Image (cartoon, rainbow, N blue to C red; front, side, top):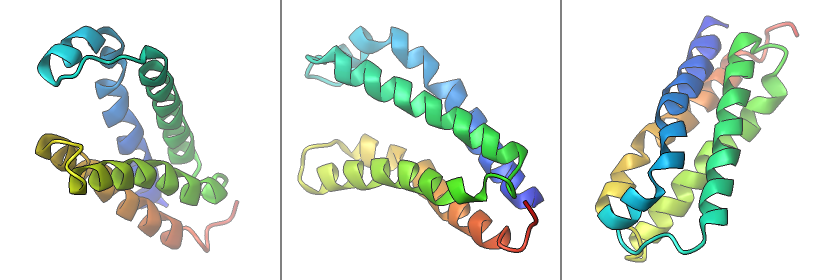
Length: 124
């Protein structure tokens, strides 16, 4: 139980430290990693949905037994981003830095799966 609590809480906190500043860095990112973002609605929409999932991770971390059914969805949320970025990298459409940057997310997918297995006998 403590393993699941720690994994989900750390996952939520780490990304909540990193993601909100991105709301203010859209122009900077366009300069540093061209091309400029041409559809800000997708950028901000993705960012908002991602931040919402971090709050779900914190919720799961508070009561892993109760929210165990959400764990595979949490892994899917992280995993879909990993698959997308690595696929784009394989196609030459994403830089090496993006492929490396999904490393922590891949690790959390594996840790979420392990937490799911470890909590199978935990009462809800």
